[in-house]
Length: 125
Image 1: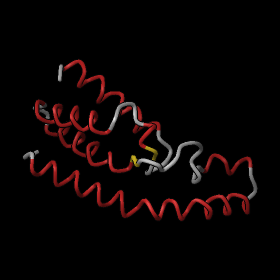
Image 2 (image 1 turned 90 degrees about the vertical axis):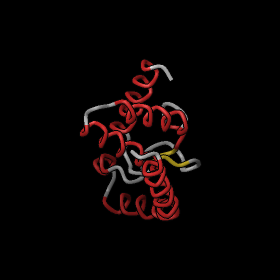
Image 3 (image 1 turned 120 degrees about the horizontal axis):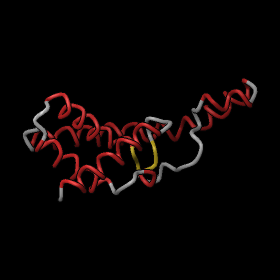
Image 4 (image 1 turned 135 degrees about the vertical axis):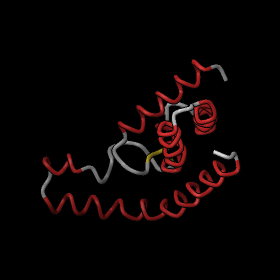
């Protein structure tokens, strides 16, 4: 993968990370497919001489687990910003209604995060 493509993909993923509103997001909100981002992150980790940057890239790699297929897009059900425009009871109901979806994703996210961590170890990164 050309260096310019690696940088473009990693920067786009970093922007997506900084703009997301929840620890779990729909994979469709990623700027590139997970496999493409993984490849770019691995390539970047492989060439960087900066140890701190390599650790940040590793964290970003494992954070890919928080992007799940079928999670759904749209407003984050846990967004506190919405509380300004709704009463407390409406906020509590919104969060309670969303909780089962979050709970169902947590084991999947944890398993994928572990698999990504294991992948980094297998690559010697």
